[in-house]
Image (cartoon, rainbow, N blue to C red; front, side, top):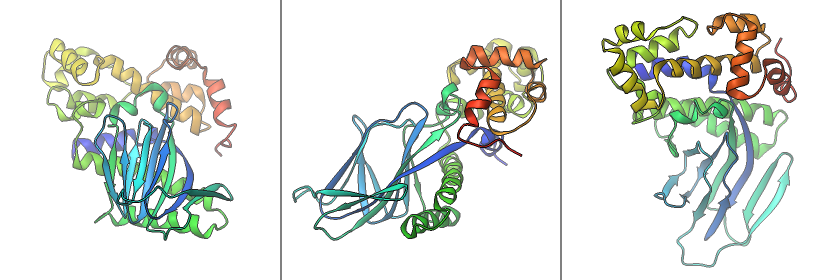
Length: 312
């Protein structure tokens, strides 16, 4: 198994997303659909189920999408989706509501393009761990990706038929689709910078995997340097150059992200979580979370369960 697959498996519990399917669009003729930038932690996405369109962002290359493509903008950049040949006046887009989703359709033009627009809340994004892994644009070409294609088809069918339970099904499918996007992206384009880039460099790969695999251990620079087969100074320089932080700061990021995920999404005792991520006590973990996220574990768990019932 490649190091990139290893680390994705280790990070997968932190890749929790809260999907929000906003628009089911059917457009024809020349049209444009602007999208404002999202708040921190929200990623925008478009799933093209029919036709073709382009997506433009200020100062960035235009992205061309064909039927079956999924576009993810992990940083929620403002953008405009466009279709048509540019030779005709812009079509008026009408909006109706179909239960929990908006339906947008061009008026007076045969539908040529169909897309699902929405956003995902990246629940690890407030500590920037996840966002450091991702570029500003990820495009998944579904050709040859049968599992992803089936997910997209099911999402589309649920929205079109408006069946009972569609929102819950779409939420779970979007979560799975997002992780698949990451996996396909990492397999095709190993990152040039960010935390996952640590795994693409000889000086840092083994040390990063060791910390991700056993975050509770009291790692020392000497141990990590020995694992990496480099000097302490070389290891620190490499971590700083590649991910912007020294090795033990990286370890803290991983520990607190794992702890936050478990506090938010499980009913595990805080003392158990603290021990599993390398803190000597619940109080020590609480102080670390307060410093890092400005929130105590109890408040974090209560705020999460306002919208998500406690696990059983």
